[in-house]
Amino acid sequence: MKKTAKAKKTTTRVIAQGFALIILVGALLLTLPIATRTGEVNFLNALFTATSATCVTGLVVADTFQNWTIFGQIVIISLIQIGGLGFMTVGVYISILLKRRIGLQERETLHESVNTLEIAGVVRLVKRIVQGTFLIEGVGALLLATRFIPQFGVQKGIYYSIFHSISAFCNAGFDLMGVQGEYSSLVSFEGDMIVNITVIALILIGGIGFIVWNDISTNKWHFKKYLLHTKIVLVTTLGLTVVTTVLFLLFENNNVFQGMTPLEMLLGALFSSVTPRTAGFNTVDTAALTDASKLLTMILMFIGGSPGSTAGGAKTTTMVVLAFYALAMIRNQEDINLFGRRLTSDVVKKANAVVVINLTLAFTAAMVIMAMQTIPFTDVMFEVLSAINTVGMSTGITRDLNLISRILIIVLMYCGRLGSLSFALVFAQKSTTDNVRQPQERIIVG
Image 1 (cartoon, one colour):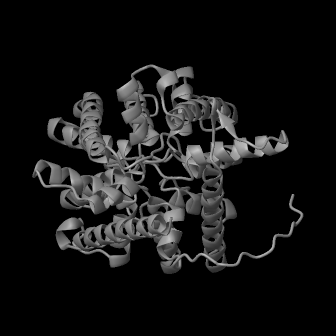
Image 2 (cartoon, rainbow, N blue to C red):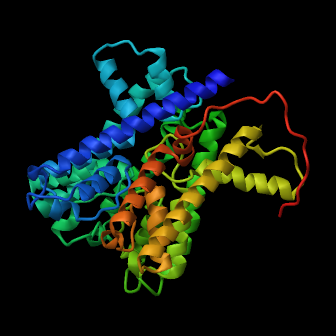
């Protein structure tokens, strides 16, 4: 048991250090004169952008198109691809191409990085992940090209299609639509069926997780044969998408959706329900949403995508475990049962830890930011939840944050990509087993 905990801690540190190194290299590349249109950039802004890209968040302090050159944009999209897949996945895949032997230590680190249920078959899974990713991003780029090429020309249209396909699949939220207007995201395509459906599909496919991909490719459409994990992810994702689409239609009918056709309203509501988990694009003005929609968006940002995916957040499975744990308590049931299976107690403990740590980090950062700057509570909470859950949506305050606030957001994005529990584990003390256990005593809760 001790060896397993020590190994997990070691691999977590390797992953944390690896991401930190990639962010630093990305930041240094973005400080080069060739990376910006002005020829100069503040290192903190470069670090912020590199962190946001590597952690597939999407928060920016400067418009991606108007501030960064082609070189800078390629650095950003490369960081997004590496960050979305995970540097271990990319590294091991290159080793496979070079026919290098993958050692046990690498397999253990890869197992932790990809967040698989078991170490067996993890190298084979990496092949499927990388090949599947390129295939899906390629199809997405082809579909987007049917809209971007007529509008931007062949060369630029192809480039924009590839950039946005990678950004959408990796749930990053970076865009180049600053060519039409600063920080405009995909607002000009709010009624475009192909762009909306393609981006939504890429976000969802990237956000359900690699384990789910593998399970579906193995068992095809036989739902009963799926892993419990896959069943929970698919049902929860579908349920959240349908329910929140309806809620956004109700909340924004007389607000940002006013004057739209029924199709545009449906596309806007569907996009608004998907992008907070955790892509960061928007087709309507986020700052103009009603308070009800902003709160719903924050809830979706907190939930996020699914484990082992390109998405962030507390994760769908975490929230389902806690919901059914509460339901079991209400019903006075000892076990938590889902789809004919019983969940183990360690899953409940981990789910509780993830939620508590995420909320603690978010509220602490929010208090510090509000203590230093006069920014509305809603906007600050929106920003910190967007950062720690690697979403990238903002009400527009990112570029108004001061030095300390920006550093806090950088830390939150980094925590969110690693996973709050993994981040805490990096700094955890060496575990010890007491020979004598303390006596138990009950307290009153609730």
